[in-house]
Image (tube, rainbow, N blue to C red; front, side, top):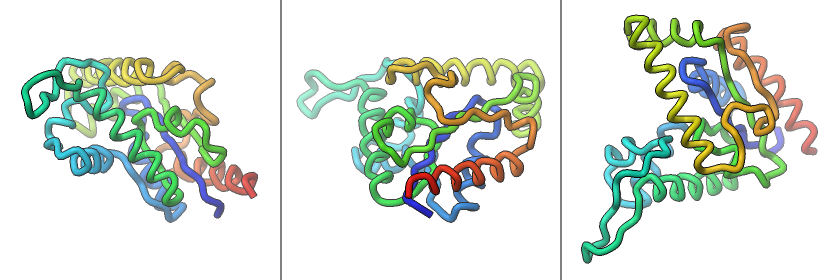
Length: 199
């Protein structure tokens, strides 16, 4: 298979993480999601827990102080810069699947980028979160709306596009139609077809 980077955007509760993970396994390539926060922590020396708080969020409330105590940088901005640098480095190293973090925007100039957005009807996503996180319906519905809003604000803040709109992706897929495994299988087929066109 030709060198290819697959960027997966996803609505909360659509199964995007699991689909991306299974897709990477089917293709035999590395998979990156929360590993990107760990890598950013190692690169910056900032505690992973601190970075986790700002992961995929546009809210900029925490300043990282300099050693002298003067000035500083917003941690969210620093995390985006670090993760973008890491994403570009990973894309150079090998084919891989990257979840979220505006990867489709960060890598937009690469001819070998295949960008996907995974969605599903809200009711299906609420049901999935209820089952996965053992939440009541009210809490799951709140979580779906909250995380989707955070992801939208994050994407719209750092990119020139609009989160979840067709213009930013090569393919949009409703995971409720084929399920997690079926969607991963479909994406494998489409990814291999895309890779074949790169030859």
